Length: 127
Image (cartoon, rainbow, N blue to C red; front, side, top):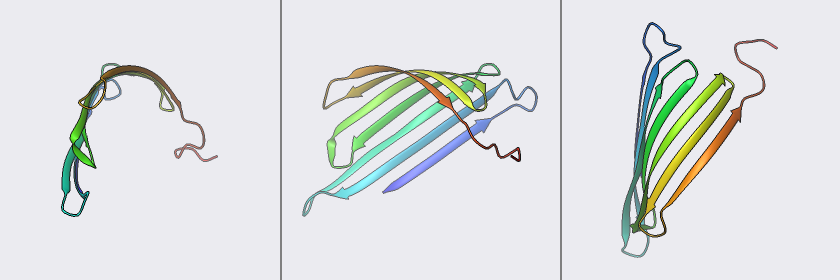
């Protein structure tokens, strides 16, 4: 297996609590022996961009592509749109829409609403 990961983050020197940009990428290549002489080589990966539009608001786009490790014939790719609101550093509310295109089954769309709450000890404070 071979993989590649690249992340780029940008924050301006001024007003850096109101603007930021992140670009994450990952690519994978898998080579597997499925039989006595059969070797299957498959690929996968994603690319994600996120832009901070205001102090607590973020928008993002993601593209995923994957082939399955046991067959070269099945693949799927998906496009995702994400809207995130972060009231504090310990809370995230996100609305996400994803469309997945498959060549082996029906395509589908999904909408997800996520609420993430971090609780517990914070490293910056002694408790």
